[in-house]
Image (cartoon, rainbow, N blue to C red; front, side, top):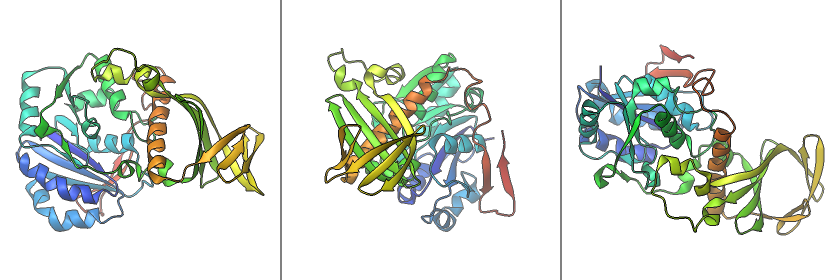
Length: 359
């Protein structure tokens, strides 16, 4: 049995794994104690072929395990991580994003820490976005809290919410801040969300600036659905608060977050000179104009700059996930009540034998 498993989920991020995977293996080459578990979340960018051609020697050594699932259409952070953590054999499991470098000796450092300390989990110091998702914990603790919360759909907050539940169970947070353990590939925000439903299915995005801290967002999806709501910038509103160090509890505090003020969903249709929004049976007409839409007696400006679209989607997705966690009581029964990490995978290119992960 391996002592620690580094769990990597990947959907069309081959370009990152080509830079990080072998480097991470060689920097933490403890064949008897360490495994790297890659879950190919139905990538279409040649990941499977690259692993087969260039990484097979590590599979044969037993330090790398490759799984592939062919079901997902969009990247689901919580679900994919739950799958790979369940597949891992290590006593300790560690989430490792495809763009992260572990650093030389990270595995040895973690093994030492878990041997010497009880009831702990390890994160970064939460000061760098690119390594916030790095977490190491006992697999038994991960299973006991029922994994990442699959109520979260889009970008953000799934990791912090997991950390918060670990704290609630009396498991102590430890953190690493060593620069050599905190490196990651610099890449665009579009790369972060490019495989997720909200970004992949947007037809149009509109914004209405109500005041410096409150903005309405309207997203029309290609499938005829829309989402609409107001996002509130509590960070700016509370800028006069004493600075609080980065911490899990700070991340869970809405004073330091962008939040949802109100939310609507429904269907929409194109009509002459505009669109119709159907909200619970009520039809609202939005008139098209050069700037975007005139609707609800407001001007909604169409966003055409792709970088702004990406930023809005990231902010909105994280705010929605924060809203979701506030809408149910935290207890073991309410987290993934129908199971977690459910799906079918194939191991090391053997498609004659499927592995079913059931509830």
